[in-house]
Amino acid sequence: MADNFKSIKRVLMRVDYNVPINNGVISDLTRIQATIPTINFFLNLGKQVVLMSHLGRPKAESSKYSLKILVKPLSGLLKRDVFFYKDWLTSQINLDDQPDVVLLENLRFYSGEINNDKVFAENLSRHGDIYVNDAFGVSHRYHASTFGILSFFKKKYKGFLLSKEIKELTALKNNPKTPFTVLVGGSKIGSKIHILKTFLGIADNILIGGGMAFPFVKKNGGDIGESLCLDEELDVVTDFLLQADQNNTNIILPIDCVVTDSIKNRSNISIKKIDKIPSNCMGVDIGPQTMQIFEKYILDSKLILWNGPMGIAEIEEFSQGTKKIANLIASATHLGAYSLIGGGDTVSDVARFGLKQQFSYVSTGGGAMLEFFKNNYLEPTKDLLKINNEDY
Image 1: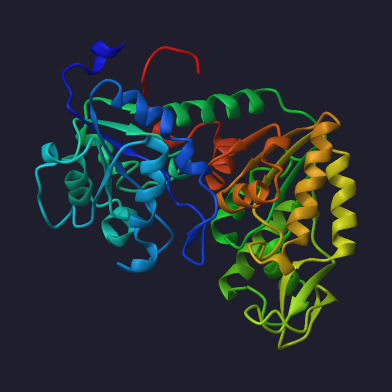
Image 2: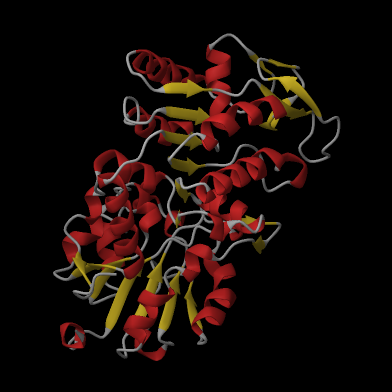
């Protein structure tokens, strides 16, 4: 297998190091750890590896979103020095003079990444002789580093992580179990709702929590106070509910929630009906009645797909709903259900709760996981080759 890479000197690898950071500290290294086998594969062949990733959704360059914070933990995991290449787009250095692992600054500091700009993709491509995608979490994105860049390489491959994720999800989709429950939380309704539509008529139940729930509540005439909700999300919800009425999938929304008038001060915390939140308060977690309702569906399920926390789970006072759901899914798994957990925040939460080993499979991607279930493939990756012929 080494002969396939004999003539190449440098590997350009897309990774997903969009790790959770709280108060300047990385709270979970799962996504970094998952890429180490692929990096080491090429390092053991004597190749230099140039890593590229994004972090967060910055509007412009910002120290808050700099990948420099990853250098120390990455160096520790690889047991070797990592060179941080900050101005890789505007300055040119001889990479031959640098360590065997190079980390480029945040791709999303540049508009060309999300816009899939051809010139930006070409500039990226100059940092490697071959291209490897090991970033499952963004492999559904038509961005420069995952899609536009492909036209500049004759040889492009899936990393071990990406191949493993696809293999696991393919096997699961080809052998579905029922009752099938999809549980979604978080706040990215715009990026998830179109995927959720594809589960209508496929999943038996869709349970909606976290910030995802508030546009539904508001659309139904409820008072949500200062809870997360954009006006444009109301139209998205309307279309989804119209389609849901034509299918047999149960759509289950929270009926109560934890509210506060200050996330920062964590004061005046109480339980309210989710459609009767005071005007000066916001919902920050699902309530006890909702947990009881969700419990019935989860424990009755044989296949459970979960993406997104039930509240602001990184804050202890607002994490009980997410913790309860994690424990319920773990219990269902022990009773014989297959549980698939995905998404950076979700994985970070279950790791913090000490439950990461209690699920059938933990995916490094959230949106990508849902997208794969929708299509049974991820379009930007479909033409990538395996690194070797082993079935991993």
